[in-house]
Image 1 (cartoon, rainbow, N blue to C red):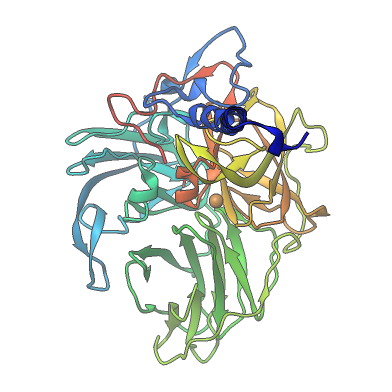
Image 2: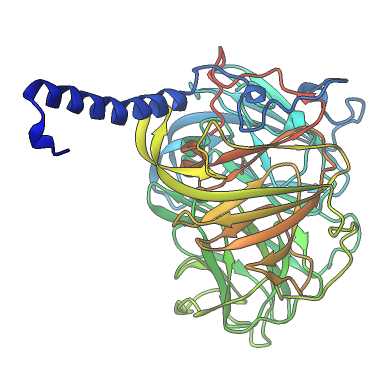
Length: 486
Ligand code: C2O
Ligand code: CU
C-alpha cells in the first residue's frame, strides 16, 4: 500500500502514531533517568534488591577503636575564599588552615591519626576522604554514604590507624568535582616504624591545577631542594587532578619504589622512560644524586618539577620521553598473600558511553555494564571473599578507576598477564580500548565507592559501589545536609 493512497485524516493519524511511537520511549527514558532529590544508596543500583536477611551493621559503627589515644592529632579548618598560592598568585577556591594544598600530614606506621575537620565558611558542606588509605568505613568521608556533609560551623573527627606505609592524600568528597579542583586537599605520608633508609631525603610533590594553572606544592616553577652528591632522594608525587600526567627524571636514572602507597618489589633502574601517573594516583621515585651534585629534575607533567642538587638551578627542561615504563612487567614477582585463582566473586565493570538522559538532562553519558546512573551496579560481597573484577573501557576516553577502602592487584591488561612486582593499586589508568583484570580481598566491611577519579565523570554518573552483605547506611544523598558525594 502506498502512502499516497491515504486521505489527509489518515495521514494525520499515522503521523500521530509515529510521533507517539518515537516520543513514548523517550519520555519513558527521560522519566526513568530522574534521580530523586533525596535517596539512599541502598535503594539504587542494578542489583540492589539482592538484600539478604540477618544482622545489620550500620556503616556509622565501623570505626577505629575509640579507646585508642591519638598519636598524631591535627585540626584542619576549611574555608571558601580567595587565597594566595605559594607562587603568589591569587585564586578563588578552598583552603585548609589558610592554604592550599593543606598541610602534609605525616604519621608513622601504626599511629592513630586523628583529624578534626572544622567547616569555617564552606556553605555547601564538606568532608574528607583519605584517598588510598583503607580506613574503617565510617571514616571514608563520602557524604551521603558514610557520613553527612559537615555543615557551616560544624566539625567532624576522623580517626584511623595508619596501618599502610606510603604516600596518600586527602580531599573533600562533598561536591568533590568542585571542591577538589578548588583545592580542598592535601598529602598524607605514612612512614615505616623500622627499616627507613636514614640517609634518604623525603620530598612530597603534590601536583594540582588551579583554574588552569599547573602547580607543584602550590608553586608554578620548580620545587627546589638542596641535595648533596650521593644522597638518596625519595620524591612522592601525588596527582590530584582529573587527568593522567607523566613523571620522568632528567640528570640521573631513577627507580619507582612505590605505586599508590605500596612498595614495588625490586624495581630496576629506569633510563629514558616516563611513568604515567593517573588521576588520584601516587608514585614514589627514588634518585641517587650524581657525584657531581646534579642538578637532577623529577619532571611532573611538564617542564617543571622537583629540582635537586647541591646548587638546584640552571637545568634546562627535558622533554617527556617517548617510552613509558610498563608497571605490568616492572620489578620482580612476590607472594600476594591470597589465591586469586579461586575467586568467590567475579565482577564486570564495563565502561561505555551512549546518548540518553541523566536526571532528565539529555546528553552523551557514561554507562556501566550498559546502564546509566542510577542503574549502575552494586557489587555485593561477603567479608573474606576473594574478588576478581574485569574493568573494560570502550567509552572513547581514559578513566582513572578508584576503589575506596581496598587495594587491588593487577592480574592482566588486555589479556597479557602481569609478570613484574605485584602491582597494587587504588587508582588505575584504564585507557580507551583497555581491559584490566584486578583482584582483591574483601577484608574491610562497609559500603565503598568504586568510581572514576576524573571527578566531572563521577558527577556524570561514572560511579558504582562495593557493598558488604549485612552492612547498611543510614545516610541519604540529598536530604537535610545536602549530601552530594560527587
Ligand atoms: Cu579520591 Cu572517591 O575519591
Ligand atoms: Cu572517567
